[in-house]
Length: 403
Image (cartoon, rainbow, N blue to C red; front, side):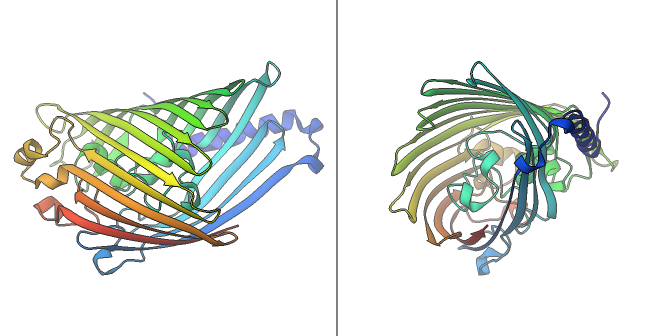
């Protein structure tokens, strides 16, 4: 299969957009152009009683910084360009610094008295997955400083690979009274060429090589009632990639992963209840004489309460198992020689946030964690040698400004 680079895809999207604009230039009234420019700056502080999260957190770490500028231009009522540039530092789990977070063109048409919308996005497209993936950019748009790590793998350095991919997405929206139905289908080249994403997919620490293969396929179906009071969705990612090793001592191989996710949410004026459950079926072949197959699982339940217009609180229980048939980690520990706590994580978290003046937010949360499955070896080099503490606490504080 011919592999198309992300740079080529982005260039083709820009060329297509230029042709689209040139065709409609005579009807374009620049006085009606709607544009917006926004930005944010967030600085976090992380402290752990043991283990490390986002840098050397046992001593207190300031290695959690998010700076971004995003803009959108609506040249026509149904034609939108949007992009975001980002600087992010999260210790060993994110070392890319500056990057183009996303850059997409969105074109849609409405039918049947605007009850049906059909559209397409192209470029570096935000990935529609679960409840929070396409709105996780900044602390203002997520329920906590740290998202549920059983589903959204920030500490394992997969944030950039999960947030956007280079390709295209088809979507539809249908409104019927108090009911709304959304369907999305994406074909794109994933951003899995970073060392951390390659390590995660292959299971090989510091994997010396590159990922190739067919694009990822992704689908999401969403049902909303009464403008989002109740939401139910099903997301699924189908990924098949080839690892090309550049060291003779480490073989090349292939990875196949299927990740279905079920999401539910109910919202009232003062409170919200949320739950998500998913599993990852993974098959790795070529790395060992016998293919390795595994099914991990993750789920969380979460409650949010809006105390006042400026204050809110969140309570969450979040669980991840590296093998849902071995939730204690005993079998995997015997096979690998690693500690049992490397294969599960159970996190009880409580947090508050305060919008103390306009456009300023401070959020604080406490996590009591049993297990180390979602900790990054980049920040915890002793984990792969059987080290690490299975019982630990995490405190996170983040100050954020937006415009």
